[in-house]
Length: 206
Image (cartoon, rainbow, N blue to C red; front, side, top):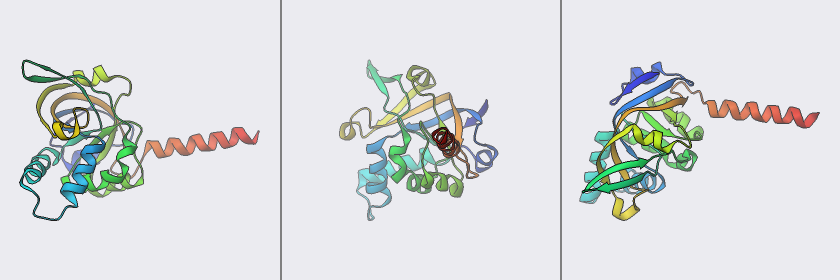
């Protein structure tokens, strides 16, 4: 298991290869469909100057994401005595963010995108160009994921987006996953897809 501590350097990212098991520690956020749409359409591609509230969140996210991580996840949360905690936090299917992720990686300096199911050629190209990786989290094990999300530090846009779609700012401690898309242009998802297609074609020819 390779330990990754945020902020993660370019050199560390380049030392990783598809198939490596990692444990991620440090401050990161969750972010799903609404969060990605907001980042691209209202922060990255919007004309400047941004409205003050958007500018403040842009600056906050840039601080968190520079050398950091985003987790494709809509967590189940609990508020006890005014304090939030994560109850369950399984990964969301990442391909839903394919139209946005390359722009988010480029604009914010992300090093790690966490999710499930892999992503497409745009994200793979961005990982190679900007030195980032995609990490496949453990599907169907939301409680295991939550155990590694040890502190909720803040939440952004929960009134506008709702609890699952909000940005949850969380301190991760040894969050587990597998690098399946690396900064060298390799995608296990693409390779396995081709292998499955070839295997199916061979079966159909029999």
